[in-house]
Length: 372
Image (cartoon, rainbow, N blue to C red):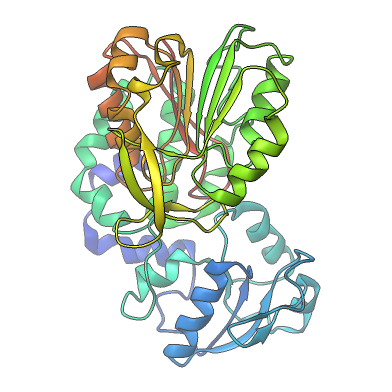
């Protein structure tokens, strides 16, 4: 039975059994001890919440050289090789969105309990906070099962339908191996969906420090008409300008994308999860794609903007309706984005075929494509 068919027959009371089967021991009560792999802000949050509920932390581990030796939540960060000293029955919490390779490595080391960090909130919500990517994850699936079935019928190829099934399976179980068969390379510019020409006018929403632009230039042999790149985070914007300011017809803009031209507050952490934050952060210009000077020329729009994709698409309604550019849209920052964004794109441009691909082993890089 497919995961989508299982979802259609699923009751909320059955989800704990799915989680227990995928992660043995997770339903046996809150653990007395655990260890964390990942010394980013995700790991720090888990460590602080463990301390608050009395869980003994056996260490925080990370192989990034700049993190080793630093102190996170009172623990000196150690390399993963130090996990050899940790008892194999200890639950290891993976404080990262990129789960697949790390899960396989830990299991290869003999750890039976390699738990993705969102499992803690789902099983023990009174002790662990929800990350926005996973907030109300199961409630959204159960409440909008009909939307998932509608999306399945809208998708244009079998690979997209298989991808959707794997994504639903992962969201139900948090078992990253369910995603593995669906993983595809070439995020945002997949050759099996559309080809890039040498005359593209490309809008990069959430350009970060330019990694996607670099991929675009490689795919087009540095031949293009124009690129306009949006990045509100000051540090990443500075990197973007330093990298591309000398290249012709590339315009870098320190701004968010929104449904109208305005000012917003932006939580500027200078990393990949900076986001619009209405009640905190610094002031940031927000622009509407339809009002850009390049709007009528756009042939490709990519959006990876931390949950603001819906607003940005609404601000591109005339562009989509009148010009139907190719779209590459991140569909994972909010649980509802997996069904809401395709629905919105079809509303704005009914002629779009829709495709779905999974480009990483975890919740991230589920990307929706529309190609006229």
